[in-house]
Amino acid sequence: MEYKINHFFKKYHLDMFFQFSIISLCLLSFISCMPARISKCNVKINQKYVLMDDVRERLSLEYISEHYNLTPQKAHIDPRFIVLHWTAIHSFESSYQTMYPSTLPTKRKDIAAASQLNVCAHFLVDRDGSIFQLLPLPYFGRHVIGLNYYAIGIENVGSDTLPLTDEQVASNTALIQCLLDKYPGIQYVIGHYEYLLFEKSPFFLEIDPEYRTIKTDPGEIFMKKVREKLKDLYAKGRLKAN
Ligand SMILES: [Zn+2]
Image (cartoon, rainbow, N blue to C red; front, side, top):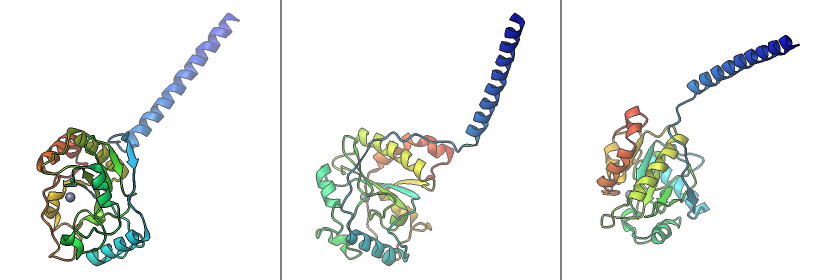
């Protein structure tokens, strides 16, 4: 009887050992075949959409047609870029209210001739790093001439006289990592002031050669800090340098 019990346990242990080995091998081969995850998205994103009405849809489709010569069914983008901005407005609420309507405020005469669609990025990051989503993805946003069809925009409350904060650097970086996980097609993270570097790129769709503005946002210092935090992604080739 004792022999039988010992035999049973020995056999049982042996079976367990083989089962454990096989499961481990399966798991290892499964994990090695999975695409490498760059990061986990553990960022808190508050949803605070701007006005999503028929006017926005119509003006967005018109913009895509008139400026990019494309006629999609929906005003959706194909994200390849993330473009970082500052609002040049010193409070969150004023920044939000400026982007809220579907149509451009009358004071924006500089860009009104191009379209009545209001400017709006997909996200707005407050001075303390709080992130708010203003447009559902992958909805079209007007925030960067030429690249809107391929770009997700992140606005930050600040300006040249109110420099962006370290909390905004951290939140932008974390949000970018989430977006890279969600959209494998994103290759570039650029500051708005760098958009003209892509004028010759196939992603730059603006058909009016006169429609350009000079930008300085969100500042070279901010871009340097964000890129420093993303340096592993540049080293791995996940992100491309400009
Ligand atoms: Zn900008």
